Amino acid sequence: MPTVDIHFKNNISIEKGNKLMDSLSKILAEKLSCDENQLTEKDFSIRLHFPRGRMSDVEISIFAHDYQARVVRQDKIACETRDILCREFSELGKITVSLLLVNYGYSFE
Image (tube, rainbow, N blue to C red; front, top):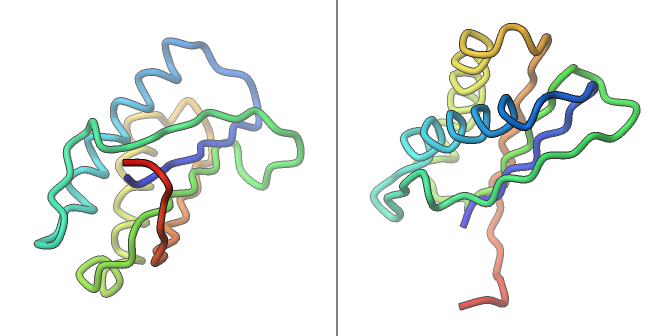
């Protein structure tokens, strides 16, 4: 299950946070699906954070398995995701997206 951490420089409404999470899960289901793993928008764990000292108004960190089909498109996936979110949520300010592809295990069934 890919996980996504969204860090906000400023507080946002719950409604706006939910809209962002819904949009992001749809975008990523398309962008991260590959032959090895077809994803739906329900396949993501998305968490919102409000820490201090952020570099951008909204920083999004995506953690997903390092399937080769994703690795070769890693930068493109991150840039296209950022571009879509910047168009849909321009009022949030500067948005950055990091895609971290890793080979990991997990302890749940």
